[in-house]
Length: 437
Image (cartoon, rainbow, N blue to C red):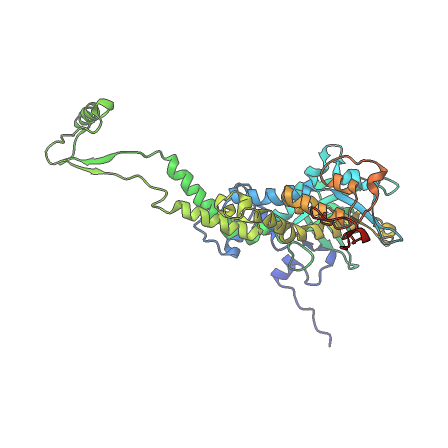
């Protein structure tokens, strides 16, 4: 006998079957609840922030000085350096393709209304804040890339389709725009699953809330404007007329330069007590601010001298340039690799990639150090034939000297001049005339 079909529960009827088609599932990444602005209380509970602390909005969080300084430093340095299209030729030499169509889009004008540097900076800003930075690739009818446009990370999601493929979904309002992965440049921040990046601000959220709360407290403390010299307690309760008369008498006898440091006679039974206003040093407000600067800079991996902490740069001297070089290698280089890999895969055709063409973010300028170190390094490379005279002049911002400057030369080691009185052709030989008789 056939069993009657089991009735679906109310919860099942509301949420639908567990085997719903994959095309109905929309993913925004586990971190987006934190920064979308509609459920920050849930994010605070998830991240362990006490509920009685007023959580800041995203704009307020980015207004914390250390957070904004770190984001600006990373985004502006990555956006200000040139993106080159490079190809390995048959001889294994690297050839810079200055006439490639992408060079202008990546370094001059990304679209009619946005400079390339501004678009690149906004993408890194979004990746640091939300964990993901997006561009839309606009192609002509022939398939040539003609524009690059910014896509807001907080309006972006991805959807798994029934055939196992994945598409991006952009929802700036009620409508949604479905974008193929080939039409989106997606720069990831640090990722936990390889599908969606995690913003550094999410990991640093508790420290950001702490810093924002401390700054808000400081502002409110000084905004009250409480600045009194002392407190006088009368022996009995005064009515309105008596209190006003006493205040007038007190001001007449104590205000003005002529009454400075004069003695004050109080009514019988009244007590006077000096009042000390809140002191930043006594309340350790300065120490707390310094600690929060270090804490936030640690999350972004930015050295303290970059965020204008003067004490952090004292005593370094020449080593400060080495510290700046370390910043490039340890902080900017991981972002360089992410940017290069994604742009090579999305902006170049499969045929170009097969031929050894790729996109390169040139950070050589940031690794040069101070002027003296640069000149000493170039001198060694020139003497050993590593670079030419024209390459030397290009590295220092000078024009070339023509074809003669493109020749590699290995200079011989300098020799010491002969000592005074020595012949250059060796010691003088004795002759018969010099022989004694």
